[in-house]
Image 1 (tube, rainbow, N blue to C red):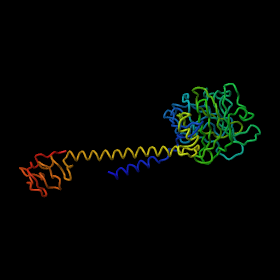
Image 2: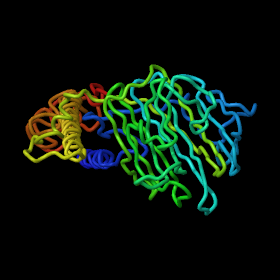
Image 3: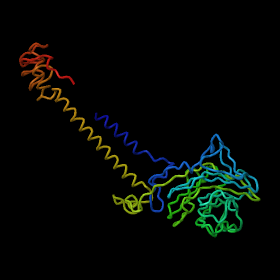
Image 4: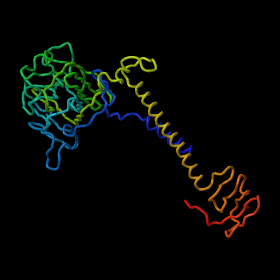
Length: 386
């Protein structure tokens, strides 16, 4: 029994020590809060083969020059001049806090002239073509532009990621490549990479926007920009669009994963421990190492306590069964109700007293104080079976 308990404890230790799923955002810190859990939104996610047997998608529309290669991508534009394509969700996004992760690909040939780029939209209006990377100008919502072509001279280099929050009245500034009205930007060489290129957008309602990009290595995310007090329209649509002009590039959407997010309270104990000193007096950093260790020890203590309690209960239960069956006398095997009328033994070993297997009409006639002996008994007639 003790060996079984140790085996269970070992299994519990191994299970508790397993790392979290790398695809999960649980435990991520954003806006001084912690992502407690996420739930993927099927209605706002899309993967290969992208369409059903009727060549449609229940949750997404695509149009203009966009076409689908069911094994590879949704190609918004080909490597041809003057093309435009788009992909939009059919349903609005109702989650207050969310994460959108886009896997994309731009460019297929090594050349010095290419453009123009593609955009990610979280906006009030959907599927309205226009001059801003293939979508309408004066948009209401969030636009994040993957710009590969510089329209003027800048102190920064291209390709570039630029974010803008539109109010429905302000135009995108083409001459400055969005620099005039940006909420954040970063330079990132995401064109023709050797690893999958991804963009991750995390939004906390009316509070915080965070944008990260992967282009150097797998699961190697660069902080692009973040902004506070970002207010987006209620129930926006998610969209993607691309545009080519005199120069061109293929612009591909490979996968979109959208998840709703549940955040911890701003004043929760988990956050306060990470902000200051931990309960052991050590300084807490932004990582979740301390909190994870404490949680693991707490779970381990509960597990060991449950196992110990079960072991004690099992011992008591076994003792009770032995007493009922006549195996619990003072130094012997029973006082009564055993194999004979008077039990197996009295205070001694197998013999003594009035014990014995039987002396009466039963089997194994008894004797004196020796082994298997005893006084009068009833043989097997008084036996209790369990």
